Image (cartoon, rainbow, N blue to C red; front, top):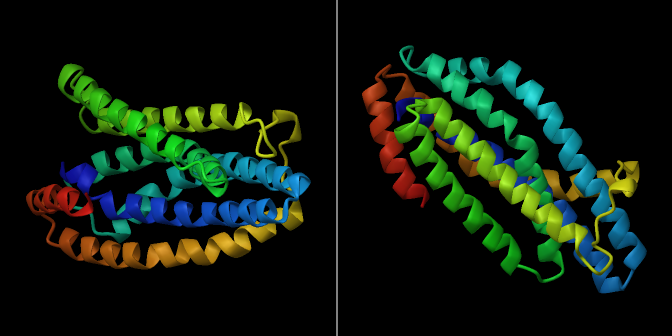
Length: 235
């Protein structure tokens, strides 16, 4: 519990940033939809998905490299540091799926489809709970089981949202052959998404500072207790 909990504020920070970045796609698709510019809608969809894929792959490697350094900066208790590092490294494997879901869901929401992204998260959330029980209680996989369950549930949500885009019958339809990063449109997405991501991160950064202060007591029991309470608070 302490190993996973010590990552909580960092994970929340990552999620907040990516949620903000995806707003760039949401705004642009909605803008061109309002103008009735079908070609531009399609032009935004494909760089958005491509950015999610390439950005996610980069973060897998970067995250694996920086994970132990981030946790050391946060003064994670020494007795849980190896497990915390393992959890964060496995978690970063799911970042491409998280990005794909966030950007794909933002595209669906931009045309008023808010129900399917909700159901995709409900389904993946339920899978996460089930896999946690199987991996942790059944297979005794401890922290690795929790992280793997999270990655697999993120993968399911990404697959569901990509299938929805592939089956779209309008300009948001995804064509793998059109995937690519358009310099101008990618910049437009980031120009909107980065400030939104920073805005979402402000609260997360304060939580990270608080978590670091708690970790400095070097007590895994305290970290575990805060994690348990934090789960209820976040809910």
